[in-house]
Amino acid sequence: MARMRQPRFKLCRRLGLNVVGHPKAMERAGKGQSRADKKLSYYGMQLLEKQRLKAYYGVLEKQFSKYVDKAIKSKDVSGDALVQILECRLDNLVYRMGFGSTLRQARQMVNHGHITVNGKKVDIPSYIVSVGDRIELKEKSRGIQMFADNFRANNGVSLPYISKDTDNFSGTLISVPNPEDIPIQIDTQLIIEWYSK
Image (cartoon, rainbow, N blue to C red; front, side):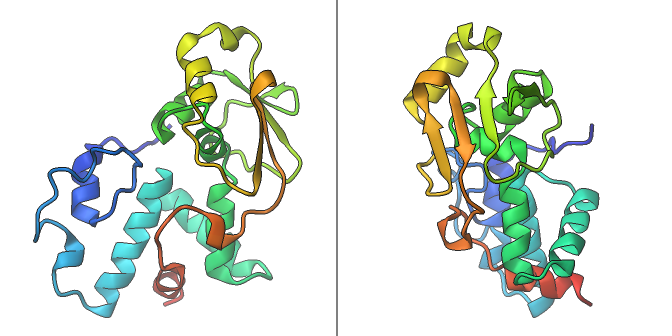
């Protein structure tokens, strides 16, 4: 499986945005380090937004372009549809619900079979969760202290489209994510324009 392997904090400094959600990610950021600090052409601004969104969700170019194609073909506003598709990825929802303290940890939990969707084991991080699907930590995995502590500490942000059941180590996607409620700072219109050339 292809995945992003570069240093995370260095990536954040280069993009000028904390795309990994770690409190220390931007501590060493200085003026002039980010691409956003430089004078960018319109093309450069589009490219920067694309790189930021890819980094937020840890998605590589080939898969990302497929999501863009799907979003453009949808009946909704293309930029909103793109973010909704990415937000409904299983690894991302596992992170948002607080099972993993980072997106990388959440993805590893899915890969190693610790997560079930509607009672069935799913070990594909890019699996798209549907509204009403119940995501749960496997019974055997609840004995792993780190997973239990993560979930109880509520590391995931409280979001209106997610319902959590702390007692049963589970969460449910209760609605399609509203773009305004998703905790990211991206101008998706620039990304759609970049791919529409």
